[in-house]
Image (cartoon, one colour):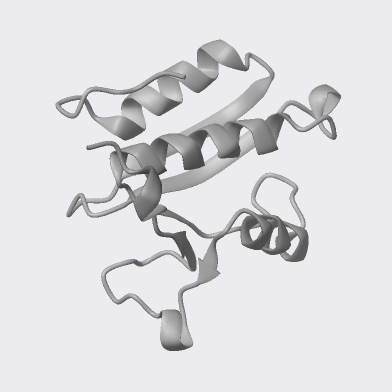
Length: 125
């Protein structure tokens, strides 16, 4: 398990590590929002010939583990931009612990449609 140093930008380190570990990724866009209070995963695109074998899930599980350790909120807005089905993407994110940013879960500091707070029991101290 890679543990990023606190002075490093988590999103940048995560993206670099994933591009090395999973060359099957056609696109990976991860960044910290302007105010720095959450990390946006705007694209995880697996090359068509490598889809359906769990690479996207492995990348996201790695992101979740490291976000938990760093105490980072992850946010996203599932879209069909790269050929995905929005309904399936939303269901996948929900299985991974994301909630819709609406109703009682509404967080006005997050502009994305879904987010996941870190598991407090896993934050590195």
